Image (cartoon, rainbow, N blue to C red; front, side, top):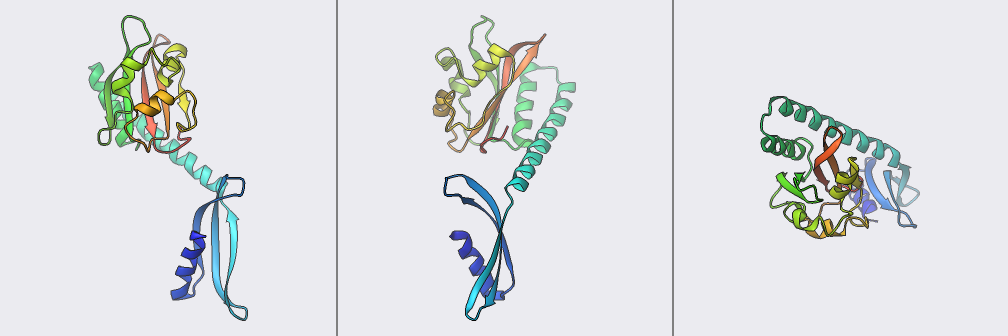
Length: 212
């Protein structure tokens, strides 16, 4: 209804055809992207003639391309600092900054496993807008309590793990409570490997659902 009002408002001054893209809700609750094209006609009274085109697939393709380009830019920048870095903590800080500034993600942090060999991961670097720490401060004390957390899975498997929607992911209640930024909706934890064994993780957060 709101989108129709926008089109009607745009048609009144010029009477020229109007087009607008909108995300609408279907009756089953799912969402669909559409392109609304409308023009004002006399039939015989003034009315709107409109066509609606489903552009959901185009939006998905565009979104995937945007994600891929963002990841590529971050990877290139990370490779540059990796070549010249001589300090572990400085490298971790640079990577977090690249993820946030180049990758356009709201928050990222790097944690390393404790030498004791337990499940505890201690944050050594982070970057993010405002006071966002995305659970990094609490990770050390919470890790043993919540063994199914994203980073715990990475440390156990040595493989990346993704939470595509934090609001509905049953494996993420502890981190959902810890995250300072309520607009964060998805996350990925990437293993840091040495001889194929994980010694830490890079965790990245996004405001978008299904961002990774």
